[in-house]
Amino acid sequence: MSTSTAPSTTATAYQVGDIVQAPYWQRGQITGHRRALVIGLYADSTGPGAGYRVWFYTIGKPRLEPDGPNTLAGVFLREISRVGDIYGMSERQISEITRAARTHDHTHALAVKAEQFWRRLKIARKSEQN
Picture 1: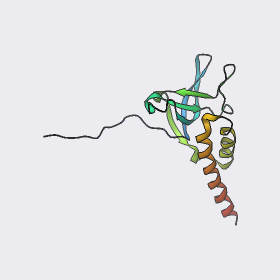
Picture 2: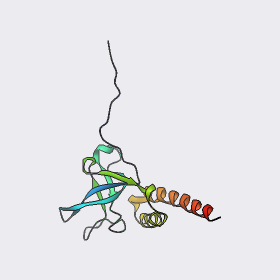
Picture 3: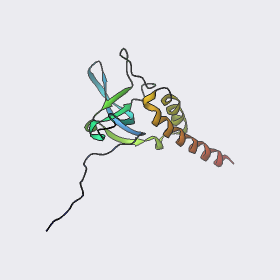
Picture 4: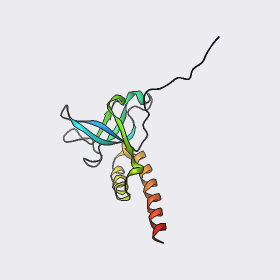
């Protein structure tokens, strides 16, 4: 007698645009946990187990520089927890996210997703006004 069971995953897969709580590193030290937006997998070929790229959007525009505070980081799956997604943000927040995400190559997928949502919000607001 053979039984087949579907493989179960205990890890949660995150999508571009998910808001997560992630450790923020500065000069080799964790300075606390902050909200960040998932912008993609850390290494595309290895899957979610390798980690995610995140943008600490509350600190500033996407930036990855050798000198100064970075707002982009790579985090392991075990280090983050989901607290929401961009679909819970206001039209103004989404507009700011879209503009800032256009400034860096790694955040392109987020910029596209945020802009599509912003357009839906704008259309809905205009239809309510009429």
